[in-house]
Image (cartoon, rainbow, N blue to C red):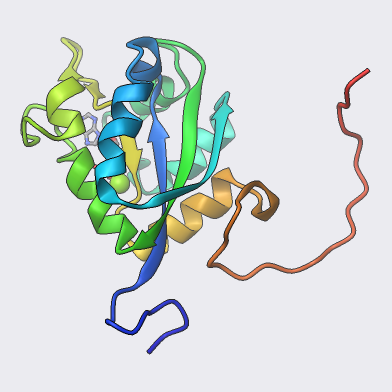
Length: 175
Ligand code: IDP
Ligand code: MG
């Protein structure tokens, strides 16, 4: 039994979910979170992010070289919709597979029609897959993506190792 395995042998996982800019501009946040609640997982982190070029390219680094890469970076940065994504971390048994099942296949035209991407996604005339949500696809990606988008203190529960460091930095505070 690993340290994240329970007595029935299921892995307790965390997975990164992004509501992409098309999801926000179409006011789908409520519908998406409602549908994801069918997973019976819990949300342990959530925030609105304005995605920098660096964050977008690091997140999608494995796709660098694909012909759609530049459009994908523009899409996730909100150049076609709004410059925001809603980033969330879902936590629970088999979280990665459960969420992927609800989000559906990458290509929204091929996705199960009752999945989020099947329901709300589209391919634009210029070939961008506007598929509304991102969900981590395997434990290695989930760990990397959660650590890329969130600091440990932004999560109410963590399953990946943390350490204490003294950091001195300037921060914006309330006047
Ligand atoms: P995933 O999001 O289902 O894990 P990936 O293959 O990791 O799929 O691709 C990441 C994202 O890149 C997709 O969600 C989609 O926005 C975009 N993408 C993937 N394949 C294509 C394609 O063939 N054409 C256009 N965009 C694509
Ligand atoms: Mg992927």
